[in-house]
Length: 205
Image (cartoon, rainbow, N blue to C red; front, side):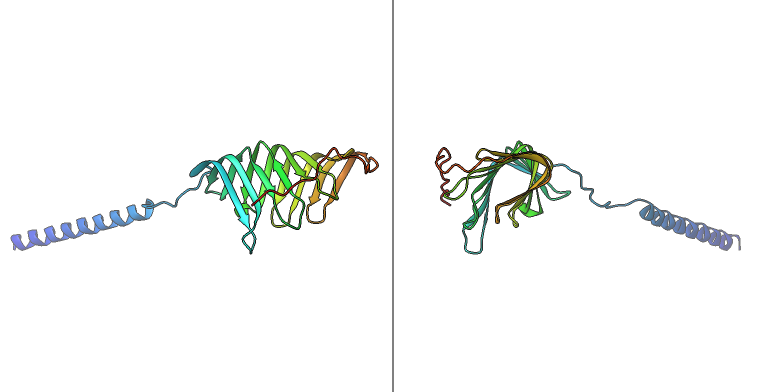
């Protein structure tokens, strides 16, 4: 009888030990994340030097070219930072444009480029138009819409005409420049004999 009682007590104790171990294991799995989700931080995951990115139209012609000394990719917002960027607008039906700055951030797979630090957009001259120089501390390029704009103070010059103000928008397709808040305007008469600015030639693509 004593032996049977000892066996029963041993089985009860063993059962409690097994159940306690199972409960402890379940609690640990619920309390601690075994595979926590990946945390994305604004740290580059790859980079390249002396980059050249090309965008073509449906016929395979290059319509936009972006160059830079250094490009870094950031996975948290899928952006690219470019050092000493040079952006070229090469659409056949629009005036040739060149945008430069100290740095740039590229978003939306290249559809939006924010030029930062001494940002300059230059529309070269052709047979009908004088060159247009549009500059500000920051200029945003909307590539698909062929637009450039800034909400900061900016200066635009074309020939001997000069316009300054806060907030500017240039549509390269229509060649229209809008100034949201003008502070100074100097419009010079057109000089048909002034040939100091040669017509731009479209680079080979």
